[in-house]
Amino acid sequence: MTTMIGISLTGRQVVLVGGGDVAARRIRRFLLDGAIVRIVAPELGEATARLAAEHTLEWRARGVVPGDLDDAWLVHTATGDARLDADVAALCEERRILCINAGDGSHGSARLAAETRSGDSIVGVVSDAGVDPGRTRMLRDAIGERLREGGLPLRRRRPTAVGHVHLVGGGPGPADLITVRGRRLLSEADVVVTDRLGPTGVLGELAPEVEVVDVGKRPGHHPVPQHEINEILVERAGRGLRVVRLKGGDPFVYGRGGEEVAACLAAGIPVDVVPGLTSIVSVPQAAGIPVTHRGTASALHVVNGQDAPTAATLAALRDAQTTTVVLMGVSALLRFAEAALSAGADPELPVAIVESGHTDEQRTTHATLATAAAEAAATGVRNPAVLVFGHVAAADLLLPSLVSKPAGDTTL
Image 1 (cartoon, rainbow, N blue to C red):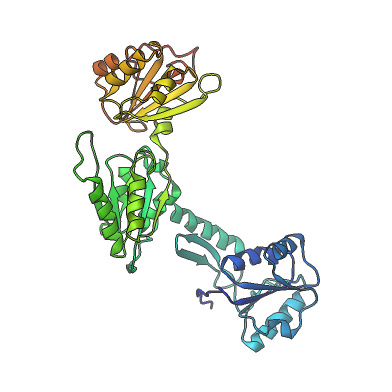
Image 2: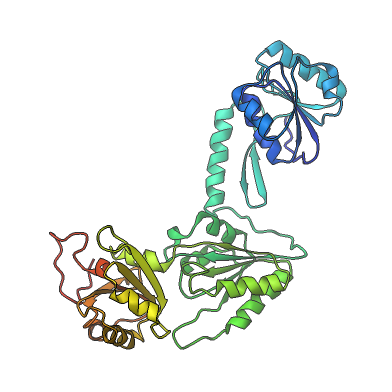
């Protein structure tokens, strides 16, 4: 029978007898766990020698003697000589030192689990009877995949003194476009503070006891002001809870993520940011529009449509090699286009308006700078939408011989 226990090796002596490839693989793992590593071997393989030099490890360049184990908490033996490995294991047994015997298949008095990590959780797999490393690795990998997908219960059951805030960029909407790390953090969350955009479908996968706080903003309607959102994050994390601030796109692209990070840091709350696919690139991509394209556009200018066009934005609109992407600009489209035309931008500059990118309601309206406002009004363009100004927005850019679309055509 085998009992699997977790042992901290931080600051503790681990002795590796043998300097071959097996030792090299195990050294990396012991160093990751913070162990003090000593190698006992007449010579070292290339990988082991490189690790020993890189980490300034103690190397006793000779055969093993009993004194090499004097201060050891754990011994690993893999000399290539089954009898010598068995002798080392027997010596450890006499001295009550745990020993991993990787040389003869018996694995000694201890064995390393095939482990996978997810956040601060470690899951290990070992065989109870016999040794079948192939099977344990396959099982470990299957469990690891579920953990990365957020498909296993990872929520803490005991709150800590101080919680943690994770700002997670959810991407443009589909659940399978959120990052693996973002899915894992959602599965660990006690509280999810969410916007109306982004992968709201994942909220249905949360455990019933997870608190969901909807702070979504709509054009002209901000029911929860930003300072209150900051307070929610700080207050919940201050109670020792894990808080995920789930945003559409990327937290640091017009998402006020910087303000939320600053509020957490000012309150002494640990906080980190998980990037997401920004709608600047992903929404045009959903409509078949590359924001840069060799021979067509070599620069990208991004602007908040709620602000008046700056001199830099007007210059970008006049530059045939620059793509200008406007977020939150539907209501200001007429004013924006008029300012660009007055500044000398080409009236025939292609424009594409992509609504609800990466959703079933996605729709693309093609126009020119001179006709964009009228086309948007005629087709009833609504938020959320991304506006693309530049030659990459031409309807026939990628399939010129197959695609011929009049202004206002809503298909890709």
